[in-house]
Image (cartoon, rainbow, N blue to C red; front, side, top):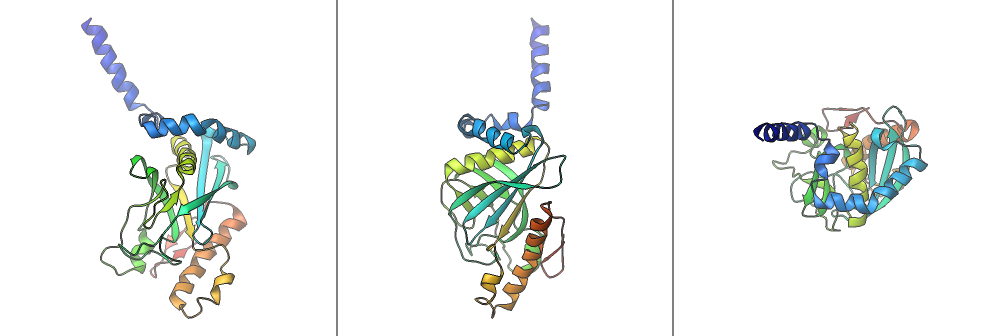
Length: 242
């Protein structure tokens, strides 16, 4: 009896050590509910786009002015992403322009990645964004740049990208499958708008802001041309070099 108990404990420890990220997330009720409600639909979308759930890579692009988040995806052995879904942002705060400090209610603008999954969020499910990144820190002289920026549910936002709960269930699962398949840094590109030319005249007197946006759109245009994940460095002015 003692031997059976011992081997049961050892087996339990072994299984926990080798549990996948997906298995760990299934311990949370909201993730299980999302899987029950959305899993078959997600796999149907992936299948229609010749994407394999076990080798999935995803990338998100948000446009603040349009209140839209685009989902791009590819298989991990491919280079080029393709857009497979759009999601409407139901709440956001602030105005066009980057986040510079704690309490400005701004949604960040720039090139980020998902750095944490929160299945017990105050806002249903949430995906953390690595704001402030090195560019944000170089561009702002504020003592506190703020943080805790998420893509989350519940349609409430103070600097975050808030989605309907039905949408965050899908978004969370797409990211979860990608993470489970080995994509450790899921890109999130946040832009003020889609077409820089439409806003250049309106903001012609705000040289620093325009310069920042022009830098962002070098990256955007490169992604649209190549459909490949951007590789960038941070420059001394708080911008990006591609």
